Image (tube, rainbow, N blue to C red; front, side):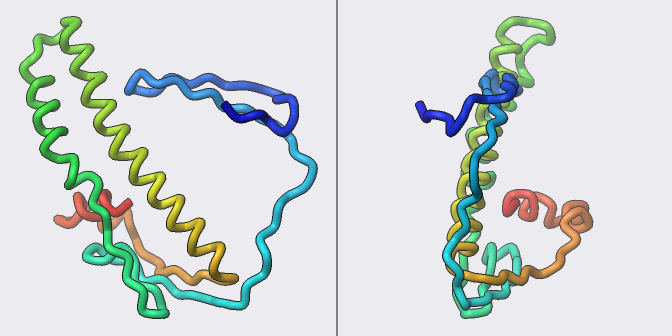
Length: 149
């Protein structure tokens, strides 16, 4: 358990579809921490075979979290489809499916946060390709686009 830097001004408790509870605290802190200045700049080209290709030649492969969890999700969703509507076992199956999806979303979010933090710590300016993700999400590549996040 972490200590808060000051007394919270408000607390919000949220329950998600997977049955997990989250508490959100609003606190005020004295001063912002700034990162030390760096001279490097980098450009990022986003893609599907490689998640990102940096202007310095570094390639970051896409981890494909959804594809890795697809078999488990398929099994859980089949089990859910076989349950009678309105039954207690269906409610339990819904929570299992939601937990599996939440795990995929959490791992993807964590990986993206770690990657973005590493890029920002090493570079002063970051230039990213402008993509229409909503348009790509409606093509036959939709599953791959959403899996890359």
